[in-house]
Image (cartoon, rainbow, N blue to C red; front, top):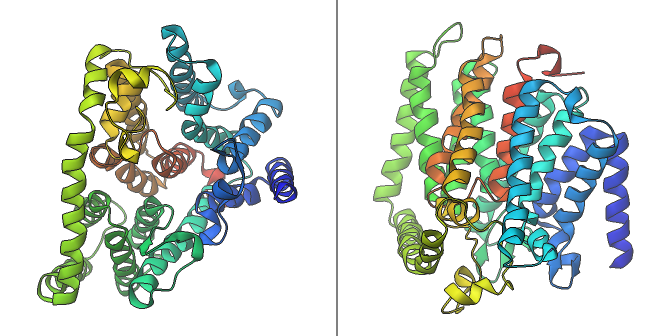
Amino acid sequence: MIIVFFIYILLGLKLSISYPRHFVSFYILATTKFLGFFDPEAAFVFQGLGLGMPSLNIIVFTVVLFRGKLRRISKDYRVFAYGLIGILIYGILRPLIMGIESWLEAVMASKEFWTIGFFLYLAKFRRKIPVGYLIKLVVPLGLYLSSTYILFELSGLAPPVYINGNVFKAYYPTYISLAWFFVFYFYLIKNIGTNRFLIYSLVFSIGLILAGHSSITITTITLIGLSTFILRGKVATSVFGVLRFTIAIITLALLTLYSDSINNFVSDVLSKEDSAISSREKYNVFRWDAIMDSPYLGYGFVHKNAPINEKYIDFTSNRFTERFEVIDSGYVDVLIKFGIFGLLAIISLWLYIIKKAFGNKTPSHFLAKVCGLFILQYFLINYTWSVFTYSHGLIPGIMVAYIIISVQKANYLWSN
């Protein structure tokens, strides 16, 4: 396996330097555990630390550092990039200043946030990574992930890495939502017809429902549905098209309500979601205690072996109470890491991107607005799923931020 790891590293390094587009594909596929057939995090482990994605992120930072200075990119890229870097540096330095863990523990605890380097890479190689390439990469990926959920539900068959006993989990459901927003954009500019859009929507909606994250399912369907009525301008959707979309969603809802098998499944998903919400309240008690002791500045990236954990964590009976950070309560996670000031900084950073999206006046303003809607839903999803601090939210969000900024430069749109 050591040989395989070196091949993995060398391939990533070669692609990142010589073939930026291919490296982007390689990076995204790695986050999906190579479509469910190879898990680099599980395959490459050193002293309990998965090295699959961290090694790619180290390559990203290294290549960006040695290929030129960030100040050469435009201001909009720099503002967002410096904001992300500032949050990362603060999260590492904060526990060192407090004296609650070693620098190595702080760095290791921050590895999930290293994915911000992906934005630096996209910005640095912006002339070689057109926006259209990202869209054409994500849409088929979203269809694939949705299809794997559907296939598993119908036949029990699925890519081996995505199956854990009787549980199926593809990586990441956020790609499905993003793909749906991209298809919605194609529908708005009439690149695809209503019937084709409805077929895509059906596949994506089923995939999101089966993924079991009701928050992103609800926000995606709601925003796309409402936006069909609201988005106007040179590109206008027909009343008949809107009606068909509405009828399709209502039909799906009625099937869900009156089909026993579907109803049982959805009820099971919702009961799990309700259970998860109640569990959050129970398991986050010690986190709120810690937050109240440092409400404004937080604790930074705290490793699970840091001594401070013993002060607050009374029991470690499950994975939700092993450490400070938490994936299922986004705002709690942000507050415990960065405090109120950090939360305001993160919100301001993403609002900056949303402002760019809805203030866009280029011919591709509809693409920017659709991407802005995708980010907008993060503020709701983050209540039940940490999308601002974990890679499943950061990577799609970073791609969208890159697209929103890049569409202001028409030469970066579809080809170089």
